Image (cartoon, rainbow, N blue to C red; front, side):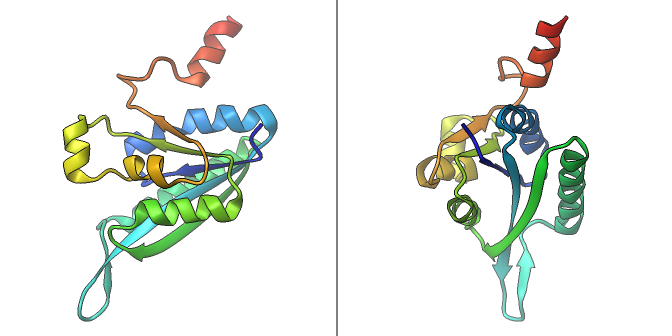
Amino acid sequence: MFHTIVWATDGSEAADHALPYVKALARVDGATVLVVHSREMFVGRAHGYPVLADERELVEKIRGQVDALCEEGLDARFRLVSGNAPGAARMIANVAREAGAELLVVGTRGFAPITGLLLGSVTQRLLHNAPCPVLAVPPPHEAAVEPERERVATAS
């Protein structure tokens, strides 16, 4: 069913909670996992500055996650995209479109609807702009069952 799955991550704990779903879905059909991180930049007089101060560490962490996916036997690739803030959702949607992705997986932070409206959520924008279905994984306290745990429970 899925040949290419995009996992959009900002390196946060919320994004990490979506990773077990990505792995489980990719294993079903041997799908390629394209891990996308968007580096948003504030443009100043001299040059651009990353929105996130720890951007370098986040990219290293995500590269490590991609390496771990490959070590687990998955076909995983990393794509770092950069652009002006706010534009993460547009950049991620463009990568999914270019890759011909059949599914885009993202984590959510579990904000109340009004908070998401006020803050502007990348996930919320992706739900409206992605070229394919979006699987939005809520934080663990709201998630029903993570697929890795479900598989272990049914195997016992």
